[in-house]
Length: 66
Image 1 (tube, rainbow, N blue to C red):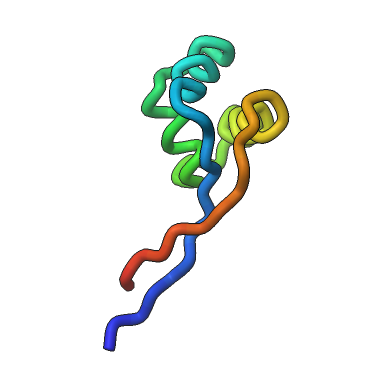
Image 2 (tube, rainbow, N blue to C red):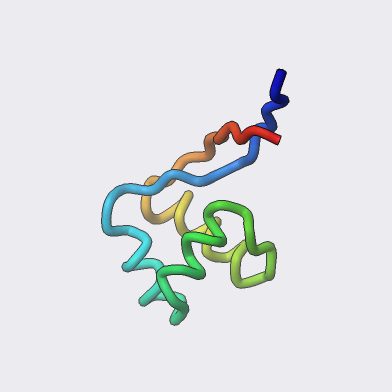
């Protein structure tokens, strides 16, 4: 039996990742990594905050097999 792990993610509306990237002057890829909690720098924390407060993002979880 395979074990599953829940990882936090932030879901945002279509097109908002590009807008956040432009606003914070980073790549869209960095925004995706930040919202998937792959990156945990101060800038990544700022991106998550902007996504939640300004772009209507919400926290969720994704299940991955370990």
